[in-house]
Each structure stands twice: as C-alpha cells, then as structure tokens.
Length: 170
Image (cartoon, rainbow, N blue to C red; front, top):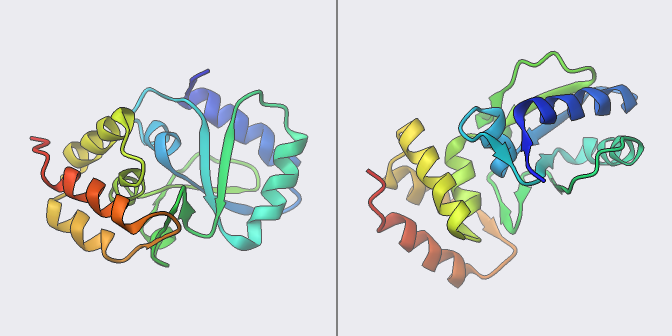
C-alpha cells in the first residue's frame, strides 16, 4: 500500500490526538520525500524520533489504527546509519499545524546519506531526486558520509558510497 502526502498528514492528525504532550518527529526516507513534495507517495512510514519522545510516539501509534508499516528509530538513527548530532538542526520544519507534533523532514543530503546503506533501485531514484532538486554535490555527500556512524558493514557502505560518487546524476 502506498501513501500520498494527504494520507500521511491525516495519519499524523489522528496520531496527534492520542499524544499527551508535544513531541518531535523527523520524517526520513520516502516519507520525508513525500512530505517535501519530491515524491508522490511512499511505501511505508519512516521516522527518527528524539529519545525523549520515542515512548510517547510508540504509545500513540499503538492507539491509532493505521494498517500500514511504520519504521521508527531513536535519536538520529535511520536504518543502520547513525546521523551526526546536527541532523535535527539541519532538518526542514514542516508547517502543518499538527496537534502535539513538531514535524520535520530530514534534510535531502541526510536522506542521500541514509539511502546509501541499502542502495536498491528505489534508493538510487530517491538519491537522484535529492541531488537534482537540491543541487547536492559529490563533495557534500563525501563530507557528510565521513561524519556518520554505522551499525552495519562499513565496507558495504563504502562500496555503495563509491557507486553513488561515481554515478553521473546530471
């Protein structure tokens, strides 16, 4: 099931009603691209959530019927990539007037960095979109990639990084 921007916002509106306090959510991956109008829809819902808000989100998520997959990570972790501490400062605030939710989209450079880890065909398309729409340079990618931590194989990430750096997205 794919979700467009209006379905994502509707889910967040309902979720916000279940929250007991304001939390911060950072949309990542296809969710961020959809909310930034860089992609028409996403296959699932992905967030990285500050540690102090993770439990509150989890409780509200369980109380909110949704019928789709939600992937969530804590404090700048996305898939197997740990983003630098400034990920939230660099993220793009989304002005959607959601009750109890401060919503951000991960910066497109950080979306590229997190998608390099898996690098399937859909990830390559998303990386290309971010690079073209936000004029991201290979030097920016290389520099940001040097700042991350990895829970997975560094060698595999480095191979994927070289693939991206050697691809002509123009």
